[in-house]
Length: 360
Image (cartoon, rainbow, N blue to C red; front, side, top):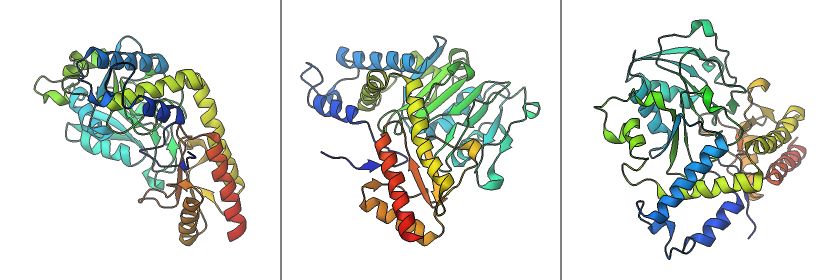
C-alpha cells in the first residue's frame, strides 16, 4: 500500500520498518501466544521487551552508567512540573532560557516551586532565533538551568549545547534520537515519544543519579523520580505498547540506519533540501534566522495569507499532509523527523516549485 507523506509535528509518521514489524507481531509477539497489548507488565515475556528496550536506548544514545532511564507517562507537559518538583529543592531557584511556547510553559510550572530567572530570551522577535547566553549572568546557586532544545512551533533549535554552571536540563522531545547528544552535558533530559521515539503515551527521562537524591519524600509517589527509579519505572503499569514500539524503532535506528551519526547526516540532507529552496525562492520565506534553524521543523510563509491557505489545501490534495503551521504562528511547517524519507522532502520541494510557478 502506497503511503502519503505526513509532515505532522506530532504524533508524527513512523518508519515503514516499524509499522510492518508491529503489524506482523500484533496478534502474537514471537511465540508467546499473545499480543504485547495483552501481556502482564510483570510477566517474563514483557520484562524481556522492557529490559531490551532500555538496553538499546542506552546504547543508541550513549547513556552513562551514572544516569537512570525512566519510562514514564503524562507527556513532556507533566515533566514541566515533575522536574522542578524533584530537583528544584535545594535553593528553590532556577534559570530558564525562553525560546518558545514550551520553554515558557515550563517556566510557568517551575514558578510554582520557587524563583524563576529568565537568563536569555528571543521573545522580542516572536522566537525567530536562539538567544546567546551570557554565562556571567547565570546564578551559581540555581538548582538547574533549563532549555527547550528544539522548538517545534517556531522552527528553531540550539546548534550546540549551551554551557551551564549548574545542572543543565532540557526538553528534547522533538530532537531526541535525531543526532548524537552528549548526555554528560546534562543533569537531566526528558522527551515525549510521539515525534522520534514512536507513539504517544510514553515519556522518557534520563537523569543523573545524584539528582535523584533531591526528590522530597512527601511528593506524590507517581511524581517522585526516586520512587520511579527504585521501582524500575514500574511503580504502576507502564505504557507497555508504547515501550514496545520504541524498542522496535531502536532496532530500525541500529539495524537499518546505522546509529545516530548516520541519522544526523540524513537529517541534515533533508533539511538542506528545503532551506536551500527557501533561500532562493521569490514566493516563500523561511521564518527563522539562519544560525538558529531546526533540522526537525522547517517553518515558512508565502506572500499572503490567501497563498498560505491555498498552498496547504493543494498540498494535501497532492498527498503532502499536515503542512499548516501552528495556530499561534500561521503559515506552513514541515516536520521532517527521522521517519520522513528523503523522497518525501524532495516531493515537498518539487511541489513548492510548481506552486510558486503557478501563483507568481
